[in-house]
Structure formats: structure tokens, C-alpha cells
Length: 73
Image (cartoon, rainbow, N blue to C red; front, side, top):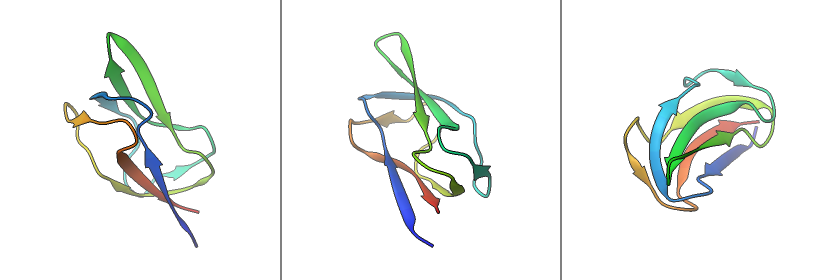
């Protein structure tokens, strides 16, 4: 099993988390939604796997390329 780190594509704030640690995800499933400049940007699983870590919480600020979640494939 490989661990895949999932980065934020933008600088912004965590608006909503839609998946929980332990969830089985399909490719492109939404893990969380970031808010940046009044836009909602989804963070999606790049491939199928199990969510093993959430590294941010709702209302946390994130930087572009910051790892926000980890899945195991």
C-alpha cells in the first residue's frame, strides 16, 4: 500500500470537510472544500483509496501546495 499526499491547489481557508478518516474514496471524491476569494474550491482524491489522515480542520488557513490529507492506495 502506498500513501499519497494531497496538497491544496490554492491559498485559502478550509470551509467544509466532507470525508472522514477511514472512509473509502473513489478517484475524484471530494475530501474538503476550500474557500479562496469568495470561491469554493474542492480538494479531491487523486485516485481511489482510504483516507488515513486529515491534516487541517474547518476554518484553518492553508497555503498553496500545503499537504491537507493523506490517502492509502
